[in-house]
Length: 315
Image 1 (cartoon, rainbow, N blue to C red):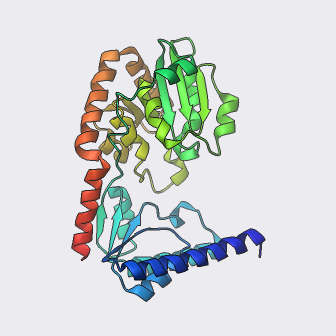
Image 2 (cartoon, rainbow, N blue to C red; image 1 turned 90 degrees about the vertical axis):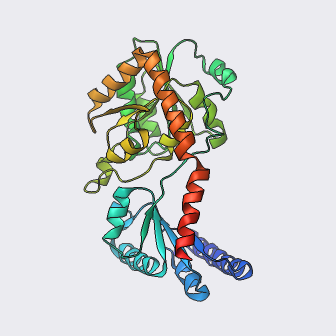
Image 3 (tube, helix red, strand yellow; image 1 turned 180 degrees about the vertical axis):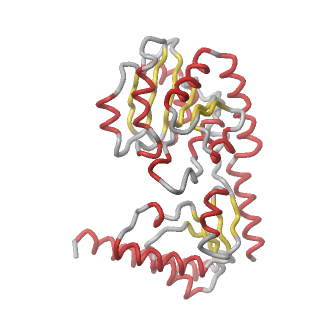
């Protein structure tokens, strides 16, 4: 057995004991657990304590091809047990709810992600950052997120090159498996900042004019776009218009706060982006609408109240 795996297993065992002891001391009315497999320790804790559990399921993992062979068998068995143990399930989208309903008869409640609307706001000071980046009167188009396939970040160099002769800057914040590819293929009007602390993200969004999310569901063939991106809530709370693709779950979030292109149609994405680049009034109008929606409906405080209602139903 590899030494790293042995260390990881030992740490998990120690952590399990600590959690079990803490739960015995605190004696909570309900446990809220973020679903993940493999996870034998959670199963053991639930068996010992008999405390009602709400399982938060944001990904099914197995259907995404995360596990194969024997690991897949173990994950399937543990998922079945975790679903049997819980009293209710919370998930983020109706699409994911439909997927989970095929695996269990437990009640499932949809509570989407949210945003700290006091932290992500249009009036965050960004003057020093703008000067540092050498941005003057250009239209700033920003992407924030993981440089992974499903975020579509590999599309951005192609998009940016269409605007190299315009007064447009593309600002990319994040890191991941595609970072070097994006760096190699970057256009002259792109700025790659790499990963930044989450506390610094609001000022980069505030200095931007348009925020993009070129998602790609090709990675999840057969399942479609089922997830609930936090970035969209943070984009809207920052009071800036969004350009993304017209997946159902994206449309439910963005609504009137942006322009959505036909999924997979890069030319249409560029067309929608060009329209916003050229229309400052429309950018401001959509940004205001997005901010209003975020404050009224998407704040984490609202999501917390919705979650507490599930706890009450379980109890």
